Image (cartoon, rainbow, N blue to C red; front, side, top):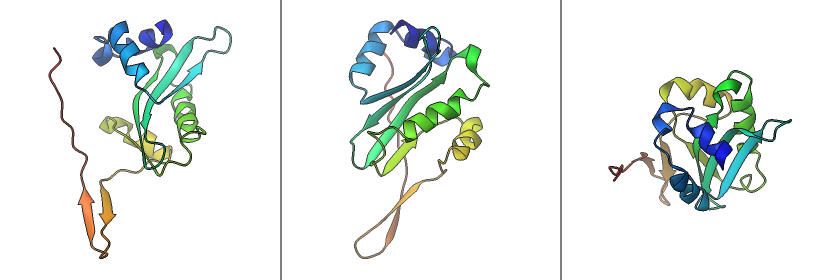
Length: 137
């Protein structure tokens, strides 16, 4: 847990994550995919996944330790998520990312775009991702 908390703290916008918050989030995370330093066994990259195991999986908190950025761990981590045995039968795997990371995720097989569903009568209907953000108490 300390490894993961330290990893989150390498990103300024996650600096307010407390150990208690992280434990709560992990209790409700369906899959945690992590890469560890071979010698020390310390987590150096991780991603959380919320999944229904049929239709949808959402990847959150993709993070690579500051000292290890540029070593290809992000790609290895995303490959580990995509190839995770519990996720391979899930139809859709989604994530949200900053604009600057779009080319990276595209190179890992993700596609930009809103989703479209087809109604039984054959008519397409576009779907948009929506987000409701609560102010933190």
